[in-house]
Image (cartoon, rainbow over all chains, first blue to last red; front, side):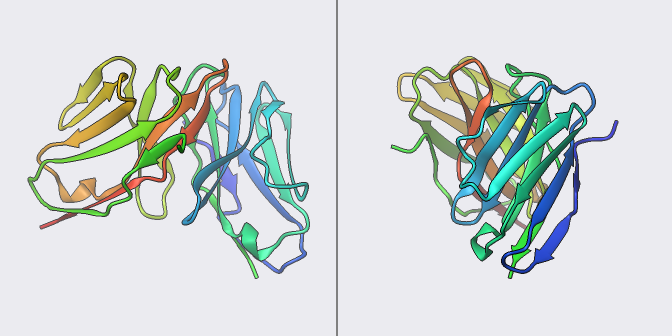
Length: 114
Length: 111
């Protein structure tokens, strides 16, 4: 079975540009999570969805960040406009449901904003 | 107090050694706990779950002390392949699995 699939693996962009990160969760998983990882702050939960509905977006740093899940097999995390401090590894993860705590992570997107 | 705190390490140990990591958490209502392993430049992967007082899986033992609000991970007979960062994970209460990750403890096993 395919795991969580993220694209792109690497993204280099200039400050001010729009960045869109993509995620395909494991088929049958009903919960999806976006995390950001930096050396300074570790893994931070940005937002999570259950059955395509955003449940908690309190971790989204500011209005420049937005996330959508139009259907059960696809989610996007958008940053507009991007800033150098957004540089990090962004992970998408999925789990079977809201009370299943085993997360399966994608390989992540390494974002560099110059 | 941070929600989840870990000693960042690094722990440098020789092959065959026994090493233990501790993790403290602030939410006394948490019922289940996890250790994830993250290799360099890779995604985190679940290593062990801890639902009661402890759990053992081969060379790995996780123990929970609810009174003191800490969990530990013990690795016996360390292998070179155990070199990684170990993340302590605690779910917040509220019906949804909002997992809080610790900053991680780095382990380096040398020959």
